[in-house]
Image 1 (tube, rainbow, N blue to C red):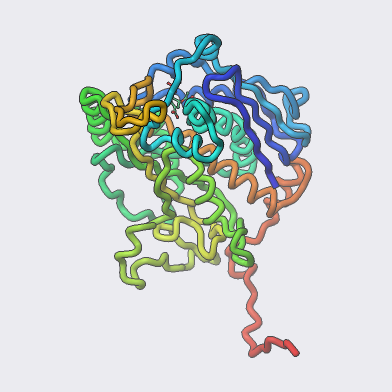
Image 2: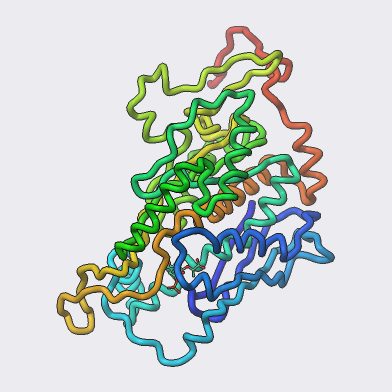
Length: 396
Ligand code: EPS
């Protein structure tokens, strides 16, 4: 339903983006977008490029008098660093392991490796964060809140939190989002946040980089987003695709994810129980999706980010210009991008969920979508009538 395209190099004049398929009537101004862009720029462990850029999105299409019109949204973000890259650029011929340098030359025949990094750079995520903002606002107008926090930096992890109770899960998760935003490493647990900060500082001192794990959450979702009737309509797969498209993401899990592989089957499911007339489930293990469809429980996913591949200490490589073994040459980079990546993970979650809601609700305007949202089936017993009769397939 939503189609997103971006263009632009990391050190070129600007990033350009288009998001097509938004309903009309979502209030949107560039300061809403800039607030999310600013979130993406702060956090312990960032590199010096973030001191140069002060990201601002210029809206150049799709918003009239402060509201989306239903036409494609068009945005532009200038790269302030571009002015330093207008003259002769030093050749880059030693591919950096873990970056797209070598595969770009193999695939596109580039004769200088900077051509690979210009587009493979995570700079592009600024535009995806910007384009996600009307999606986040659409979700908010439907009562859905998306947030995220860091649960691991290097070996430092938040202590395993107690199992979520369905009656308090939303409140607990909303509190975590708020506390994380007040932390320089975006971790909701203060003692662990201090250890994470120390871990990042230690890694900078050792001239190294460090990765981590982010948990993203959506609360207030209706049941029934996504489908199991075709594999490509499973929301779980659509989320995995989106999350694995973030540079440096190497792992994805929903709910108990990889840990559930070690659990007996009786302990790896979320039981159903009645709360008055309504069937409820915590989503603790499922992550809020069963059969690739939302259950109405909070959606919880995790992504693992490998450490940034650009390191102050050189790595073994080969100079393609001389054909000799050669060390990589350092250019500035982040030391730990994990706190800064939380808004990126949230952004992609917002885009996938807004897409699924547009699919489920249809409608050309926000108001139409709100009315349809209010009439969706809930898990009340009265809305789940069963025939309770023998039946037949009825094929010839
Ligand atoms: C990046 C390398 C660094 C990061 C950049 C992503 O840029 P530079 O090579 O100019 O120092 O700062 O991230 C951004 C510019 C950004 O806006 O997030 C990389 O190699 O992916």
